[in-house]
Image (tube, rainbow, N blue to C red; front, side, top):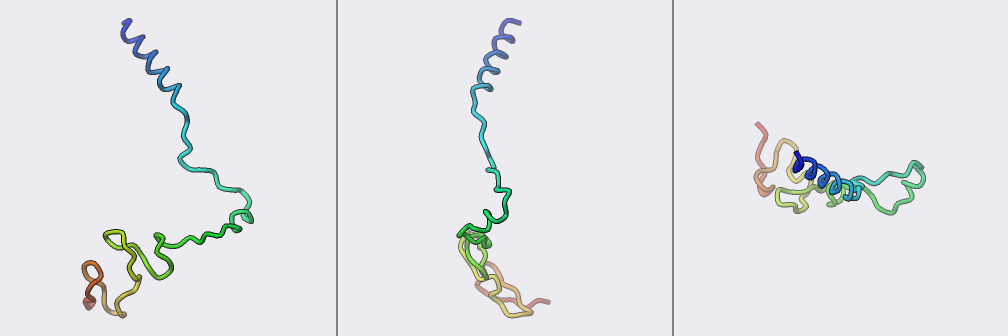
Length: 81
């Protein structure tokens, strides 16, 4: 029983000493302050008309004509059936 009390006390001290972390910072409540930012949100950091490929590189969003779809790794176009 003594070991249980000592271990619970040690765990309590350990958890109390851990600082709280802010995983998500708070957003400004004022929309005007949020729109003054010089950054633009884009898809995956590649820019408009592009997206991330299977290994993290940027690829064109629409690289095949209508009626076709891109194959593995976007290297070939295949007809939609």
